[in-house]
Length: 116
Length: 112
Image 1 (cartoon, rainbow over the protein chains, first blue to last red):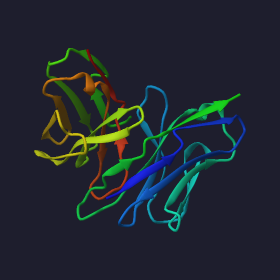
Image 2: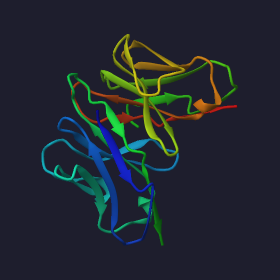
Image 3: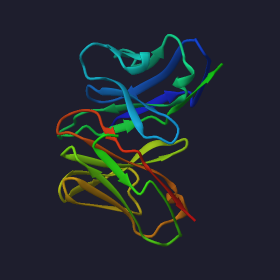
Image 4: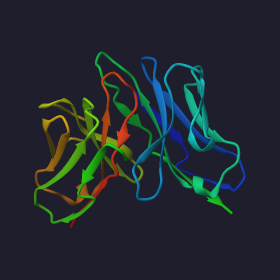
């Protein structure tokens, strides 16, 4: 079985401050890991993904995440928050287990608020 | 969301009526998924399809059925809508042995 835990359902930062959104996963096989972003009344957009290449993954809009196997973590960071980063962020885990598709399991999401 | 469209975008229906949501893709991807999104629950898998006429249940499949008669279309049917099925429904697609999904824009369903 695979699962994702996002620590903190709501994170609030000031504009220009560091953004840190936490994600821990559980998987019995080597995982693929993803961060998606959802802006209000929109679908989910892929921010970045880890697929067993470099452990530090860079995504769109200045976000990056580091895969740490020993900590089973995949935390999302951005050095300086912008007002436009306000959205809900979802971490997801996927693995190929005896089949040919990668079913995604999502965390419950973290709502990021950016204060001026 | 290029290559994947959901219809309708919004729907209000009465308790006890059947409802069908449509997902259409132009990417020729093998896998299609239906998720529901609810506050505090994230996204939960309802059903998925791994080919024409090949479908399987997800974690919250009770009260839902699906059909896929063509590669490009995946239908989600609520046999008899209940208020607990008020939600935002997302369709997603993925390629054979490729990680990551592309999502549709969602359908907001309200059951009154």
